[in-house]
Picture 1 (cartoon, chains in turn green, brown, red, purple):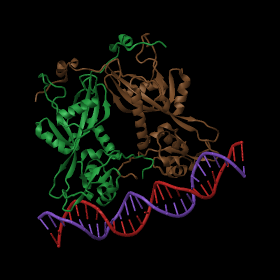
Picture 2: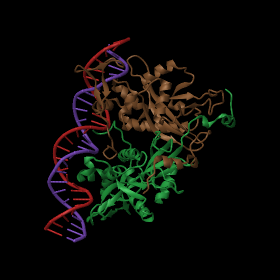
Picture 3: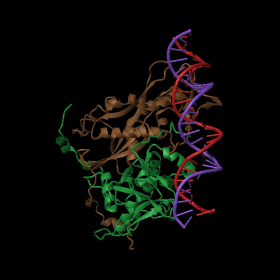
Picture 4: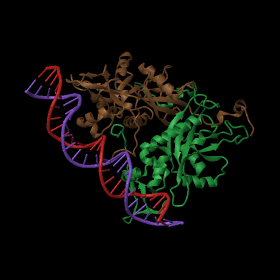
Length: 265
Length: 265
DNA sequence: GTAATAGTGTCTCTAAGACACTATTGG
DNA sequence: CCAATAGTGTCTTAGAGACACTATTAC
């Protein structure tokens, strides 16, 4: 077999022979769970929210913007020197001022016609932002352009492009990942109380044993991926949400693995 | 807020302002499980295999081909009028002559430098081909270009582009999906015997209770997503792999859902 | 005291794990 | 009758589910 150098091969290669996409974007469905305080010594009500931006009517050069005025997922064009994942990190840091967030790819949207500007491929991610992080961001930025919505509200909005479909898929993946990974920890503070975990799970899952206090509080302490917080050998407790003291927990490094073949039915 | 028509907006839009990718490809990791007959009245040994193609040294125009001579995942450039998923279906049908296969997206590979021809984005899928389908294909085509490899062999080959990484990821996803979905059914015939299912699971998973016959044969019959095959109310049995008769099963439509929060540990 | 959160006590019942045992049949 | 596949019998123990009950403390 003959050998050719890369240079020789590239000399013959002509990318214009193939149709190339007109753009490659990275979109991010940013989820957070807001705690709504409903009184002293009561665990707050937790609500899953999605961050959307309102697309400007005009772009920076004063020309009318595609899908301007509609609500959309944050995101933008990926530069050739970065991956879509890096672009998502960058764009999210620009938006929220935070790095070190949980971001995960979950799908690609590449159907011709999804964007009138041409053949534009979107690499979709979801991100989890703990509420305290988002709170400080919202204060810093002008709130007119960025807003958090309940999932009910989201699907009543007029959304740009095919973002409705992307959001539906993101929600599906976040539910799935909440069930089979320790994704919940990304919604919680470092140290949390069992009712915090219960609240996070209930925003996304709908299983009876999670809702029933007696069952949840009995099972949860023995979950292998959380552990009681201790200080000098003493159990660390808090009375943040109750009059009595509640045990604080944290996630450990255990990575659970589930299978339908050894599950209970 | 002013309103603009799509035409007016597109008049101002100039895609050359943005860097666009040089190509968009769809790659497919085609898995099958080969049954190796080891004697009459014995369940065959099952081995997970991956289908790879050997890249031609020269392209159709006689020019040297990029990464020619190396083994690679089947795939190719996506046309603007199709999605990467449709392209994967099309290319797989061209290769194997079969449609109606299980194909699933699992990742995007978009790092600059992964393909020397430029900024080429690969949308990666895995596919499951039952062995009988693949057997008929291999007879039809010339076998020099297409071959099935053990996973051990695969990772000893000199693979094109970043296909090693893509295959490692595909294997991870197929293991995961085998655990939490009824993916196994795509490796099995319509009607199968418990030892067939056990064999498929063992090619990918490594859990003790699957290997222990007594435990597997007791648990498996009560899995909610498979059911005994009956003919006119009589249980349908086979002596394909044994001297005695073994019950035939099929998958039903039940979609199991597992969660780390109600699993056993 | 009352009300609320955050649990525990106790019972029942199902299922997992372990391992011995049976049923069937080709050679 | 032997060997091999394809199971079943039976015992023990762990854990899920149900529901009543307790502990603590702000007001």
